[in-house]
Image (cartoon, rainbow, N blue to C red; front, side):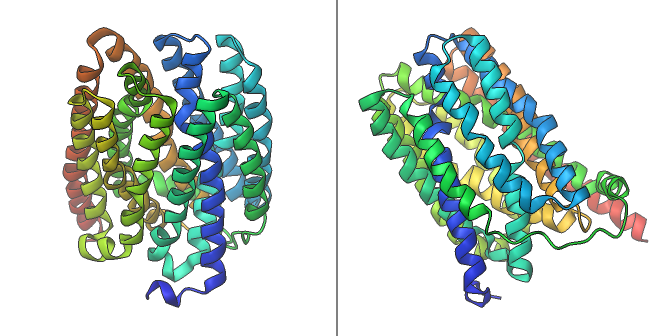
Length: 392
């Protein structure tokens, strides 16, 4: 079916949610590490602060998503947890020590971690048979993130990075109102929760996908956590950092918009492989950057890497997940890419950045991402053969 065949209201509601939620994220996500730097944190402390909340997400995201799937709490938890994130976000504006920052970002991630998988599951379920148009509504998240990150870059240049957390809280409140209008997930489980979870864990294609995503997540985190710091080391002003993140967001729009065509031409697995290879190219490109302007150009690879993987990955997970386990499966995907992978990559990136320099750190990121692509090719083929033998 075409995008036009999906009822207008679900598409509009999904687009509005992505616009407001990612606009809130655009106010602080690109600036966390430079904020830490501005209050006196070292690169090692920044690496730990980047890793701690992602470690928290390893537990928080499956915990909350599991509760939603098991008890049918999707409709309550999504807006409630998003609203609660504004409390630690505002308190971060007064934090000056490593201990205070660590405690608040841990609390923030404990509340935020399940928001994305809960929303993805709700929206993909709402789109139903037309879920392949997911990318065409998800692109509004890119629009919101890009405009917000650019505008808040200028705001930070004028008033300091603390203003970003106030902007986040205001935009998050708007997103909460939209999230409360998303329909509750209506899939009723026919088997016990842990039985469905074991079915997912036994799926060889699922295990293959998760290993590849984890490796790519490690490589991605190395340059994603330190790219902004590297640009500042090269002399970039806060408003140029905002422009850098705007360009990366602009690169998402064509990928999201044309994702139905890419899926038809490449299949979901083909699109995933394309994205995994793009992550490796992106890391290599960062290793060659010597001026802030070249860093702006590299940001244009974001769409071909992250956005393509996210779009195809969300839909691939929705295919694999047993009925009634959608939020938990989306949560595990998010954890592999943005949780465990990000935590390992943040700590490894800090050591590589300080020990070998930016260029070598980014080259290692490219190599690890390339390994993830290789694992995906080999293990998916093995999974196909094994599944064929089991069916035979």
